[in-house]
Length: 358
Image (cartoon, rainbow, N blue to C red):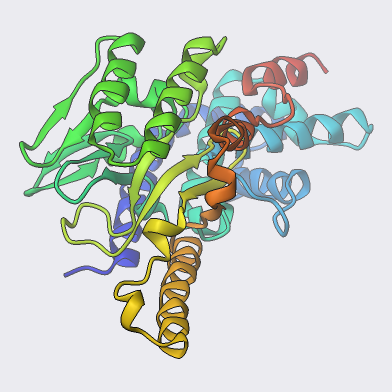
């Protein structure tokens, strides 16, 4: 059985191979145009050397972090624009005005992002978060980027994952891909936003046995209905499963936000003492025995939080009994992370137009 690291490597090799095929198709025309700029018959290594030099100059390869290839390219374009405006001689400025070369450079950078994926995103585990599973032990669902049932398992289509036009783990994502029903090996689809919210409140909410969780479901549905851009809102994931599709699993997080806009990953635990720290047989136990039992339970709770962080990069916020007295305030804390967005940055298309005009 392949390790997660080996599967991830094969996965990205397929994406890289697909982009390489696209590059090879346009290469003859690109080399011809590049040679005209250089004034002699330029080689492929010369072309790639020029692109790579600009990559090193335009990007902070040591501290930079990019969650998507579009972020990676946008930062490269911003660096190129700054370099041109500084007045420094720049061969890429001439190259970028030619459509064939421009398209080649953008594809080259996209391939570079996937070729060094773990480095670009600071080694966060792709396989764990691009196929996520949530729900109870019996009734649970999958949210994949580009789902397909192949070789007796659910997986992403490598050629599609880089071409989706929605933000990962958003409401728009769920509406476009639907949710995987692993029991019937089918996709559960939604007609529109109202249909999805009905599922959220009528199915997911009703499955929960917690009065506190039920309030969060209701608050979230209200939040989405009031949103000016509901499709871009992060999907509030209930019962995020630590071990994915396995029916018997180690942990679940009550609610999780994977914010594709900021890269933040936040889990929430609603932890009333009655369910998380209760000790059985309290009347027959000594204080020492109770302290020992409490220490074991506390250790398990901390282990759960640590393992979610180590495995998924998820930081967990816990609401205690006192917090749960005001559930509206608890949701306001969730809303803070749901609504967070990156500072406005220019789109790739806007940056390209500005660079061409320089």
